[in-house]
Length: 321
Image (tube, rainbow, N blue to C red):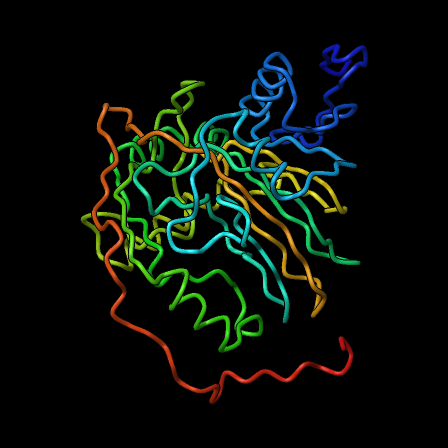
């Protein structure tokens, strides 16, 4: 039987989607006017299932911000400006085949990165464009004991500088490369995090990895990359993930401390738009009680890209026009 709660005289139910992560909540209309009891019930299930989804919602940007505040204080992105009239909205507008299709947790280049994110689908693609989430607590639990012991000793440097949002050369164009360097990384942030941190609410041990990592502390780059790839492979195993296919109005709320996510860039040159707000988080703590540290806190990036297109120019294939 699905978990449920009575709200405004109606039964709100929760339905699991995948075996190790993800659930859909049905029968609840999200709004800034929800009472404390239903917010606590939703949050309980975010912690338990890591990401929860809602269909057929009708929030706009301002209502999305106000809804987010019911779960805690919001935090804006440190380098990307919110759309006019909003304070905490982060726009994800995809065109030219681009999407943030590398595994990541939001803003881990900050020592106190967001505890949760709320993502709203404004304009879905007619095909493709799904988002995947992975359970980093379960990934830690499935590591062999010797690998758990190794991971618990390691720390890594996370940065927004030299971070690449895309997996494939075909997805990049010069406008995107310049945006990434001149806006997303206009101020450089670097944080040192434990690879295993203790979740402050559930007490679970979670892997803290993904594509914002520059390298593992005290290791050379080849060794660092090899070890990171090994640990990451446990996070992104299909049985440890859930996939959500967006419809207009859909909302996803996830625990950013125990998950990773990535978009799927399989929608050709169709447009795709989502909007996100993030909730302020705490500084992660290792299993030995040591806290993460901000190494670089908003230093101006000295490198600005003004070059022309050159070899980055992309020609749209006829078959996907």
